[in-house]
Image (cartoon, rainbow, N blue to C red; front, side, top):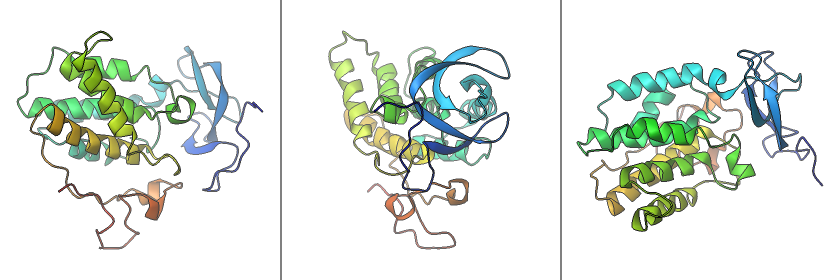
Length: 259
């Protein structure tokens, strides 16, 4: 049965496909729908298609909704000397203007990866980061449910594609991009409540491993991560998340560490 708004109860307590993102006009919780609709942005009046709806029928386009977050990403990418994609993502996510959810993470992942690679001294193609971000903006909201693949995993594939110069007919380079996406997607916690930060971290970790092993680019090994964003995420998977440590705890055993 197809309905506009998903009616099953989400295990976290959110109902009707609701997420913890809020409408930029009225502050109501947004809901994901099953049918793509054409909507008009209440701020800039641009029309675009989306699967996100406000109960009061408001809509704010991706560009307006993510403007502040993208400015923060621009500033950090242009100044950081970090060679770890994970560390770059942590720097960006430390700012409360960057949402825990949403399509901004699709753009952040490949941008962080390519910035880190460039900071190692590896020569990237001209305008590599801008090109990757342009491609990432084409990934629709809610891609994990609607397309069956998380946009953060696609971001890994985009980064590898840009590094290798892959095209649809590029043979080995195309294979590497596809494999990178698949490798990243295989690490996603698909059955858990959505968390853009968790998936961005997972994507950056898998990208680091993949790029070190298959492209022989010397990114630093992933460090231990202790998530400090628990209070920002009402749908946190808690113990089921590899980055979770209970609030107030000094135990880091649940955090991710590579090697």
